[in-house]
Amino acid sequence: MSAATTRSRTPDRLCAEAVDLAREAAEEAAFPGVVGEHLTLYAEGDRVVTHLFEAKEPGYRGWRWAVTVARASRAKYVTLNETVLLPGPDSLSPPEWVPWSERLRPGDMGPGDLLPTEAEDLRLEPGWTGEDVPPPNSVLSEEMESQAARSQALAEVVEAEDAELTAPAVPVRGSITSVAEELGMRRARVLSRYGLHLAADRWDEEYGAKTPMAQAAPATCVSCAFLIPVAGSLGQAFGICANEFGPADGRVVSLAYGCGGHSEAAVMPKPPKPTGPVLDSMAVDAFPLRPDPEGGSVPDAVDLASEDLGHS
Image (tube, rainbow, N blue to C red; front, side, top):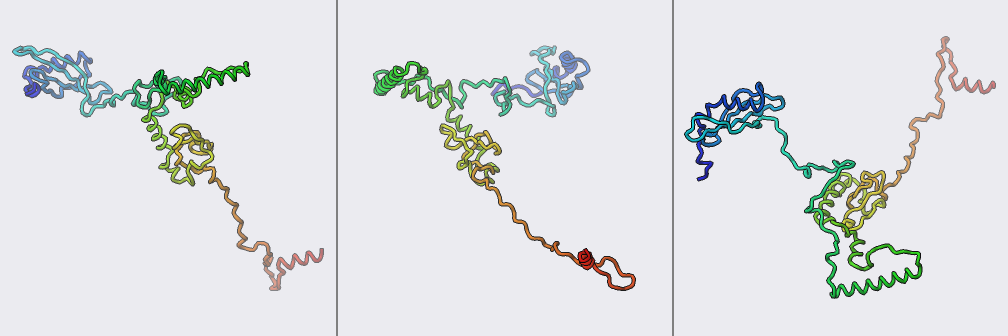
């Protein structure tokens, strides 16, 4: 049987009666006037009782002052054990603390901010350090030495022909180091396969085939002239958009993404052909100018116009 189950759940009588002692301890930890009424008590163990008092400090609604008192075996005097301010079930409490590495979100970094990476970051792996060079006297090392000798001889010939040209200090062509430098592997750390998958999932979620923009596009980015290819394994699924009017200009987009700015979908519509007039507004309608008070006929506008033209 464990020690926790052997403890009595009934509060010790003398410790339970030490309410004044507990209040004095709470007021000493805070100050008089902010310790409210006695709320309840409970047994922490044998001859150990915690008294709870209401906290009236502004901003600590629902918190309680918890004062723990204890008594030694066969002792008549109760002593103070601990005084602390604890949140209650209905108290206002801050959210659970989260490390900064988990709170950081894209776009949070500003000018001058530094974002250190962990030594065991799963997104990264060691780059080419030269430790994997084949051992001497091996078949691969002999082949590399012969190729390096040919490259060195060629470099000497070029240098002899033009003494003014100075070759930069680069690894011998054909060596593992030169290949690693050409592939961009001569860095302390490079992206691991896990890091590549994370980046691909993130880019595909924002500019991928399942986005509403891609669903309504006339064609995909793989056939668009504004797509700039990228090197490496990610080039099989992603590129960079170079359409300044597109929604993803300068962003990495999936080859299955698309938008209305596709280079082969921009066809200017033909101007609409104007329809003919519904009413004939070119003819002159005859209508009387004024009624004749004597009942005679009154010339209409067309007759008057004709008479005027005849006299003129």
